[in-house]
Length: 95
Image (cartoon, rainbow, N blue to C red; front, side, top):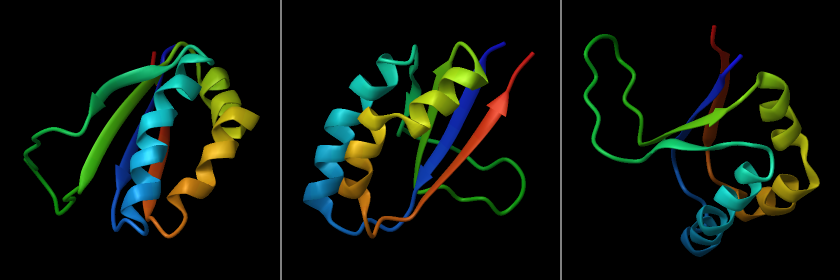
């Protein structure tokens, strides 16, 4: 069952470190069968008050693989690069 990770990056702590994180994150996703469907770009809020700053949607074959990626040593090694950066990340399982 396909799983999506919906992420939004808010206030960025260290621009250089965050740029390095962005360079490295795709490789970590690919190791677990994941990738980006959407990475930034224009958006329009059609209803409600949600106003993302930098929206990303990542896709994985299963929620299990998404969770493995999130806790993986490869991903956790780059997490410190986004220290001081506000990030929201939501896992959604599809049918």
